Structures are given as structure tokens and as C-alpha cells.
Amino acid sequence: DSGVTQTPKHLITATGQRVTLRCSPRSGDLSVYWYQQSLDQGLQFLIQYYNGEERAKGNILERFSAQQFPDLHSELNLSSLELGDSALYFCASSVASSPGMNTEAFFGQGTRLTVV
Amino acid sequence: AQTVTQSQPEMSVQEAETVTLSCTYDTSENNYYLFWYKQPPSRQMILVIRQEAYKQQNATENRFSVNFQKAAKSFSLKISDSQLGDTAMYFCAFMSAGTASKLTFGTGTRLQVTL
Figure 1 (cartoon, rainbow over the protein chains, first blue to last red):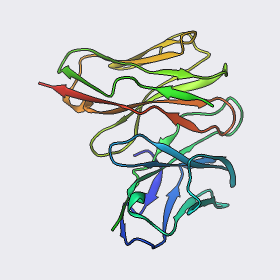
Figure 2 (spheres, rainbow over the protein chains, first blue to last red):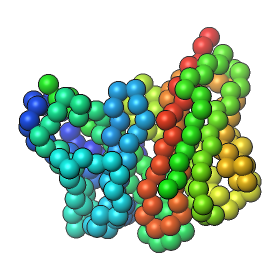
Figure 3 (cartoon, rainbow over the protein chains, first blue to last red):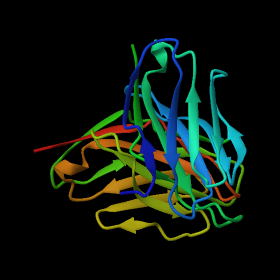
């Protein structure tokens, strides 16, 4: 168990709908990352939050948004869903408390999203 | 921007043998971290090993070791005494040592351990 909790584990929804994926980082971790992994592909970086603020943005669609709350949990919102959005969405967290103190990222088990 | 390249899409090794997975990266930074993650069929991302760029000594974790060549920007993973449970996708990843830096992944190498 990595200590990173993602809910739900599985999600099936129809095209055009909106869903919210939730991530609770490890205790003490300030940085949260979201990644998308389509079938048999690598991990595409979507977005990163650090202590409540957006820190870095990757190839995230405008239909997608995220935020990190004061308790450091994060949510990824996916709207106007398309079939191609079906993927495994990972959340990861790391300490990143100060320069040079960055550590490895620990991953949650992922949310498998199926758009039908 | 950093890039990570894994040039071996698939590899196969017999049980108990040794296999080496390759990874190269490109960065202009001097202080950073490199990782190997394992993704078994369960799709869970599991950290295998970590290397700090400022350390010359190669990291080792039981049967897993790395060959870190900073000048060549190479970071290979050696798995000794391969086991069936090592069958998985292996991803090489880069993270800057700066505060709250993102993790950049390679495209992965699918390793199959056979009897």
C-alpha cells in the first residue's frame, strides 16, 4: 500500500457526461500529480499541484480541470467526456517540501474510466 | 524540457537469468533524481529503485541494481535472478531536484520472464 488513495477504482459513464476523480495523498506530501495512461501506452502527465497551487501543466485538455484543497486532497474533473478519454488515471504524491528535498512519487492504484 | 527514452519496447528473459533494461535521458540540469517503476498486470505503479544524480555509487535494491552514467545520461536497470513475478512493464522516470518538480516517464519496456 503506497498510502495514496484514489476513488473510485472504476467508473463507467456515457459520452458527454462529467465525472470527478478524487485523490488523497500520503500524509505529509504536499505535491500531487495526475497522469493519464491509455491502453498499452505510457503515462502522460496532466497537471501538478503543490500545496494548493497549480505548479505545472502537461497535455491536459481544456475539458479537464483539477484542484487541490486546503487538506491537500485533489480532484480531477473531466467533462464532455469522449470515448477517447477512456483510460487509467493515476494520482501520485511526493513530499517536495523544499529544494533538494524532493523525493520519489508514490502512486495510487488508479481510477479506471470507461466512457461508453 | 527533460526527455526520457527507452529504446527497448519488449524484452524476454528466462527465469533465474539476468536482464538489463536501457534508459537514456536528456537534461541541462545537474541535480536530479532517476527512478525505475514497475507496472505489473494489476496496473499498480510500484517504485523499484531510485538514484540521486549527485551520488556516484550505483543504487541497489536486492536483485535490482542500476548502472548510472551521468556524463552519458544513461540509467540502465539490471535484474538478477529473474523471477516470474518480475513480468511487468518497466518505466524509467526523471525528476528535477527543484521543489515540486514533475515526474517525466519514458515509454516503457515490457519484460516477460519465461520458464
